[in-house]
Image (cartoon, rainbow over all chains, first blue to last red; front, side):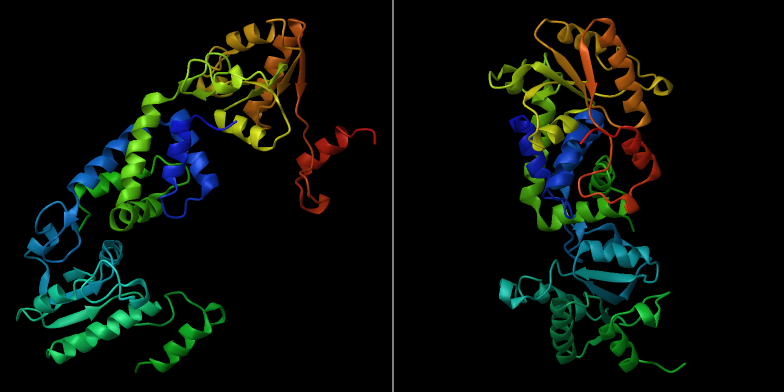
Length: 198
Length: 198
C-alpha cells in the first residue's frame, strides 16, 4: 500500500532539498502533515514569495529583491575592494566571518568546460567591467579550492592582470585549531609551500 | 548584511522540517534559489496540494485523500486483524516490512498526561468501536517502546481485555543482526525475560 498520491508527490518533491534522501523525505512529509501543518503552510508561502521576489543584484549579482542590493548601496562598505565568490551562500559565509568590509561579485558558478560552463556563464564580462571602473584597487579571488574553483581563480586572475588590476587569492592552509596529525597531505604540503615569515 | 528578507523568511520557514537546523536551512534556501528553482516550484505546489487534500480515513484514521482509504477498502486485507500504531509513518514502516496483511488503526499520537494528551485525543472511542465490531479477532499493539508508547499499549490492552477482545503486543528484543556485546542492558534484560521455546 502506497501513501496517498499527493503525499507521495510531496515526499518526492522534498528530495530537491540538498542532503535529503528517500528516508528523510518520507519522515519530513509525514512530520509536516501530522505535526506541523502551520509550519508547512508557512513554508509553502515563503517558497512562493521567495521564488517570486528574488532576483540578481545588477552590481554584485547576488540575490536581491531590489535592482541594486542594500550592500552595493551601502556607503559604509569599502568600494576599492572587490571579493569574487562562487555563490550567494559563499558571500554569506564571508560576511559571517566578519573579516571583510569591501564589495562582492558573485559568479553564480565556476568554470567547468566539461559541463559547458564557460566565461560568459559566470558573468566574467560584467566582473571585468566592474573591476576596471577606476574605483576598485584590488580583486580578492575567494572561489572554492576545488578543481573548478582553482581553475576559475587562475583564469580570472590572468584576465585581471592583463588589464592591470591587482588580483589576490585567499590563503590556503591548515584550519584554525587544525592539527598536523589530522589534516590531509595535500593541505599540509600546500601549507608548507605557502609558508610565511613570522 | 543579512540575506534579502524573503530569502531570510524562507530559511526560517525551512526549519519546520525535522532535523533541519539553522545551517542546513541556510544551505537549503540558497540551494533552492540558486540551483533548483524548478524543484522549489514543484515543492511549493506539492505542499499546497497535500495540505489541501490530505485528511484522515474514517476507518483507520491514517492519511487519505478519500473518506475511506484504499487499504480499508481492499478485499485482500485480513479484516480480522487490527494493528494499532501511533502514526501514519509507523503504518508505512510496518507495510514496508511486508510481514502483515491485516487492517490498521492510527492513533495519531500516544497517551501523555503531562502534555494533556488523553484517551479522547488518540481516538480510543473509535478504536474500541472498531475492535468490537464482531469482525476483528485480534488487536496487535504496535506502539513505540517509549514510555508513552508502552503506557498507551498497556492502557489500550486493558480496555480491550475488559471488552473481551484479544490484544497482543509486538515483540521486544534484540534487533536482527544484533550482537549481545553492542545492545543496551535494558533491551538485553527484556530479551532474557521474554525468552521463548526453541
